[in-house]
Amino acid sequence: MNNRFEGLVTLVTGAASGLGRASAERLAAEGAKVVAVDLSDAVHEVAASLPEAIGVVGDVSSENDVDASMRAAIDAFGQVDRFHLNAGIFGSFEFLPDIELADFERVMRVNVVGQFLGLRAAFRHYRDRRASGAIAVTASIASRRAGHDLLAYHTSKHAVTGLVKGAATYGGPIGVRVNAVAPGIVPTGLFRAAASQTGGGDDMVRRASTTPMRRAGDPAEIAGVVAFLLSDDAAYTTGEIVGADGGASIINPVRP
Ligand code: NAD
Image: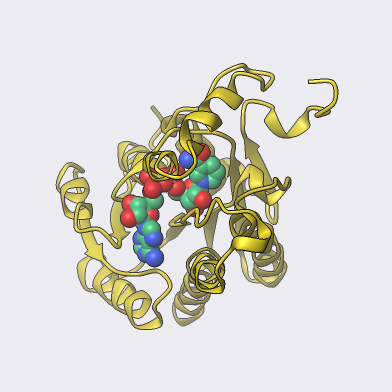
């Protein structure tokens, strides 16, 4: 294991489970002090399992909670050097005519407004400190593709790529890199929630067997890409949406 984050403070959202937890663990294993943020108070257990970390309960789609997370990070560690803005939700598996407005808005609120608030907080913090830095955002294969269900989710993840490219354009001249990881199918809590709706979770894992690598991913495999993007190994990479999907996004759907 490298030690690329020795002495660096890294804030990870959605850190109580799944990809966020794996990312917090990977960054900590490479020397980072971690600020683990999540809606769920299980984030405290994650923080307690890491060498130097705090857990903060907060909603990424709330301006007040995002400010409070930053204050907690600064109180604990003085600054934040790297961000992994990762929290996200699926929303409804209904088809277009049956999607409730409230469900569509909830997904956009967490996945798009939440990422906007995180990016804005990160850029304000870098500006205050006149510091350079790096931010990784969790996009999705749903940032490149669409399907007949999860319309709000696909829409929100397409929007995330706009946020990443816009933020990277602004950040380039001031030394702040912004990239996204776009995972494919990785069984996590998101899938357990999906399984309760129209068999969604099981179906997705089955679909993973038709992708080029013929399997679902592991959270640690996504965390490895996040660590790369946040490290100086990616020093000349910004505005990229980096796939981590076993090749799922490159295949011709009529000749898989
Ligand atoms: P997960 O459900 O295991 O983890 C998501 C975490 O985010 C949970 O701990 C949850 O409590 C937290 N969260 C949800 N809403 C929040 C909010 N408003 N504020 C703060 N925390 C909140 O799911 P996951 O698969 O680890 O998902 C993480 C990210 O990865 C999401 O953005 C998701 O869209 C993306 N993603 C996942 C997959 C996959 O296959 N698992 C694929 C592509 C993209």
